[in-house]
Amino acid sequence: MKLIIQIPCFNEEHTLPATINALPKKIPGIDEIEYLVINDGSTDRTVAVARSLGVHHIIGFPNNRGLAKCFIAGIDACLRLGADIIVNTDGDNQYNGADIARLVQPLLSGKAEIAVGDRQVDSIEHFSFVKKKLQKIGSWIVRLASGSNVVDTTSGFRAFTREAAMRLNVVSDYSYTLETLIDAGCRKMAIANVPVRINKPLRKSRLIPSTSAYIKNSASTIMRIYSMRQPLKVFLTLSGLFSLAGIILIIRYLYYYFSGSGSGHMQSLILAAILIIVAVQLAAFGLLSDAISASRKVNDEILYRLKRIEYDKMDRIIAGNDFFLEASATKSVPFTARPKD
Image 1 (cartoon, rainbow, N blue to C red):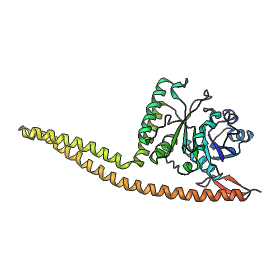
Image 2 (cartoon, rainbow, N blue to C red; image 1 turned 135 degrees about the horizontal axis):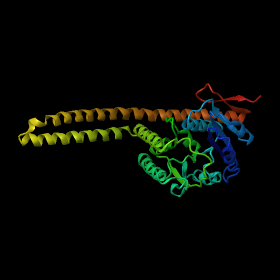
Image 3 (cartoon, rainbow, N blue to C red; image 1 turned 90 degrees about the horizontal axis):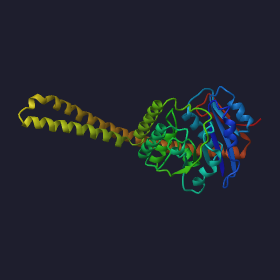
Image 4 (cartoon, rainbow, N blue to C red; image 1 turned 45 degrees about the vertical axis):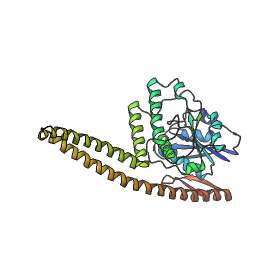
């Protein structure tokens, strides 16, 4: 059983040593533990520090591409390296590395495919009252959208089985946290909550420049992913609302019409007709989007099967030869296998 701990990094030369030193060297049930740093276009000494700390694998991009792209590149690399379990943690030493042993237990026991670290937001001293409430409201909305029971939906401290990781497809450029949970929930994957500890902050968050920006980005991500996964429900709900508004206006017009003053309320009848036309169009869009969603599910399954073929082949190559992964800045898949010199 091989565990790879991936650490997305952007200018983390000062916080990376504390993060790496806290990671476990041995975990019961795990035969191998390796670390992987994903350098997201850092302009400081992050890569040099990672090498000096003995990090097993370092990959990266020539420029900053954001947390979502960094995360999925790390997942791809871990799968190519033969990981059976993948843990994602932050390079700013936010999460207590010793809790990784606790985080992977639901996966080792077969009770879950994904484990999410619950930071127990109410107990975090450096979170403001407003931030705590926003986190809880956001988690509640994501639970509704995903049908899951995840308590701390914005936690980046997560563990994935190999099968779950192969099914991950991230389209957002902002963050992977909400999208992957909604996607996993819609797929009916088993997700476990694991209480974890956090450390005192060593720097301010770069992902959340302001509360308003965070709310805007999170809301757009939730609406986008949910509408992609449940388009018929979204469009039919909107269609129903427009239809209801149109029917109310028609009833209003009929009331005045039979009262003898219908000629003065033609605007209500015109607006009702417009609303009902829009409702019919939304219903048609819903049917079309549902067909596209069905096609997307087929494409996801094809992509999953292609990943299995590719990653299993890579496992055989690495096991049978002396190969290593080399970063490539020019290819969409940023790693190629070639023999060591």
